[in-house]
Image 1 (tube, rainbow, N blue to C red):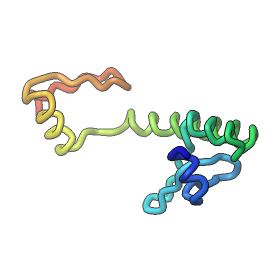
Image 2: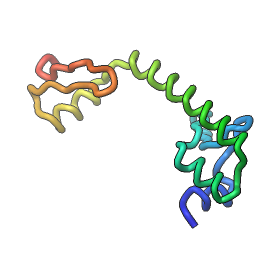
Image 3: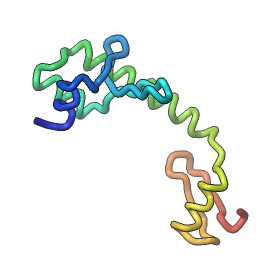
Length: 107
């Protein structure tokens, strides 16, 4: 049995409408499953095509919302500290999602 089927059988995978995913009580966030997990549940007969479709749509919406929020994010002093530790005090770091360049020497 795989990880996702074990979690499904244990009731740790939740539904939001027809979409299936993880629910985080601390933040009240529903995060739809990735397509590989959905396909595994579908091929093993745990879910049907409607759930696959709804989860795919929910995942696309979740991803769009995540990146919209991400683009507005500002780096904290802890973020900069970790980047300096990982890359060096005076290096430039490129955000692979936005293409923005952060000049660590300026911080």
